[in-house]
Amino acid sequence: MGSPTSEKFWYTKDMIPLDFTIKTERLLLRCLELKDAELVMEVGKISDFTNGMTWDPHKSFWTAIEHIGSNRQSWIKGVDYTFSIDMDEQHVGRLGMYPLSGGTWKEGDWVLGYWLHPDFQGKGILTEAALAALDFAFKKLRVKRMLATHVHWNDKSGAVMQRLGMRHTKTDPKGFKKHGKEYEQLEYEITKEEWLDNNSNH
Ligand SMILES: CC(C)(COP(=O)(O)OP(=O)(O)OC[C@H]1O[C@@H](n2cnc3c(N)ncnc32)[C@H](O)[C@@H]1OP(=O)(O)O)[C@@H](O)C(=O)NCCC(=O)NCCS
Image (cartoon, rainbow, N blue to C red; front, top):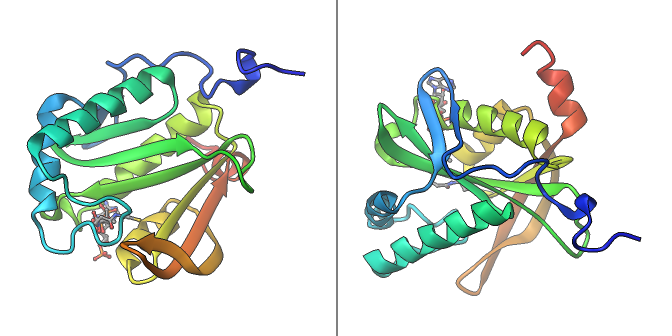
């Protein structure tokens, strides 16, 4: 029998320091910093930007700051890794991963979420960031299966999942819930074995 302090319950193999970064051809992924609050405030003002995500625009700059503080604490605890996507030293979007628990979720099930400022969409930036983040997840964290979901009309998000090599596993007629309404949601996944098979030449 394991206890919550036994190693099998840890989500990471080693502690990931706050200054940890992932570099790709065009991007740098890093832990969020307080200065990143400005961008989330800016995208929150764009009409409909958050409609396909479970969160709503922050009501004030201070709630945006508090949220970043809690993201950093979760990073230290190893229970959520939300990365800033930086291009040319500019924060252009976010990508987060956290473990799922309870219900039908199994140990090692995590979920991926993301957004990108509209000025930086259509350039493959999110796909480039997510490929690197998945590599990190499957090699450094105790991730056995990465899941992602999108509301039925969010084809751009679904296209990212497909470019990552994720499989469409389910369409839940009422899976996406927001503001008391239910919408059809598509679910995707990729297992660690599939990821390693697909990326064995890297
Ligand atoms: C979801 C979201 C991040 C997708 O952004 P995106 O720019 O389409 O995704 P990418 O950065 O991977 O770019 C892919 C696009 O760039 C193009 N592209 C250009 N160069 C590319 C490259 N080197 N590699 C891949 N794609 C490239 C692709 O053809 C594609 O364009 P298309 O949609 O016209 O075919 C964006 O729509 C978003 O932030 N939406 C609001 C928040 C949201 O809904 N988040 C998801 C919740 S589930």
